[in-house]
Length: 259
Image 1 (tube, rainbow, N blue to C red):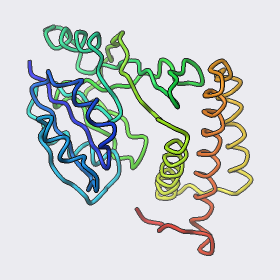
Image 2 (image 1 turned 45 degrees about the vertical axis):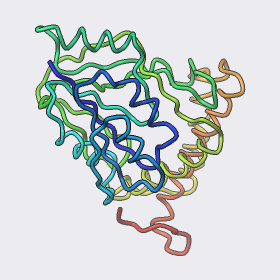
Image 3 (image 1 turned 90 degrees about the vertical axis):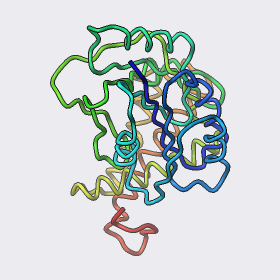
Image 4 (image 1 turned 120 degrees about the vertical axis):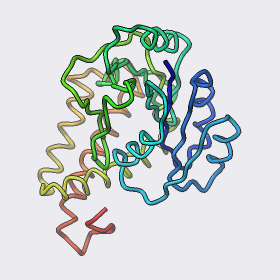
């Protein structure tokens, strides 16, 4: 059984090296670049990855399906550029691939770090993600953001025990930049699906996001980073709904309605 690793990336020079180093054992590694202006492409090629360019950004789901279409392996492992496979997780993946009775899709826990700390609350642990699957048995949803793997056949999903390591936000500046970016994509996606919002709805959802993260999901147990997580979740949620409202208000809209 052979493994293809797929990674979509844009301006990920700082994180991509560690990701690629963690999967050097895979038979094939494909990096689909979205038009990087840093050293992402050169770094990926130096690490032995096959690099393809697709700069006409269609959204996360469609872009990952483009990468998936390039694979040749029996199995596929989808990674983000800021994720790494530990030796223990590698051993589990190889064991699954060697098992003739293995299921078609597998999820794994993800250990995410926020400003240097691995969080264990706030909904960030164990944060199961489906990333390993037999080629031809799954594809990605066509969502612009928060895409998911969709199995082509009904069946159960297996669970791996060892976590995928995730350097989510290196510092607060990155957290704010990504919250702004993802809130814009989320607003566009919601608008395209016919959803609408008010500023009152934005405020309610933002407050609820903070309460759910900090109190119900107990991110306060993760110290200062846990508090920042709750605030950034509230920030991203509020602005997603506020931007959705802005899409019907030309005087405050700073980005196009269509994607």
